[in-house]
Image: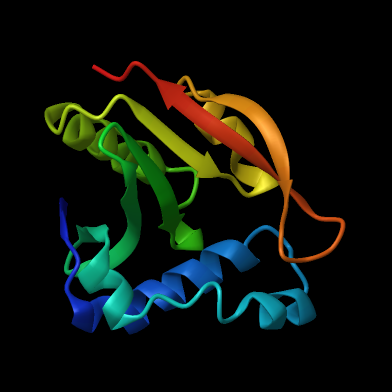
Length: 151
C-alpha cells in the first residue's frame, strides 16, 4: 500500500471513486445526476491542486485533495474511498498522511465543507464544526469544519 501524488491520467478513476463513494450514503440517482459535474475530477484539477491517491495491490482505492486558501490555511476539498474499503481504516490512513504532509509544510489550519455523513469522521481527528453552509442544492446544508494549530 502506498500514498503518492495522482497523475492527470488518473482523473477518470478518481471521478469513479468520488461518485461511488458519494452514492454509498444512499443518495438517489437523481441527486447523483445533479452532483455529477461537481463530483468530476478533471486532469486540470489534478494539475492545479494537491491530489494524493491510495494504491493497494495496484488498485487506486481512495484519494484526497487540497488547495491553499492562504499561506497558513488549506482547504481539504476531497477525501473519498471506494465503498468496499469504507470502514476498514483507509480513510484514517489518508487523513494521517494529509496531517503529516501539511505539518511538514508549516500549515496552521485546515478547513473543509463536509458531507453530513462524514462529519463524525472529521470530528475524530479534532476538527470542530464552525457553522453550516447551504450547498448548491436548496435546503441542503453542509457542516463547515476546521482544524487549527496543526503541528
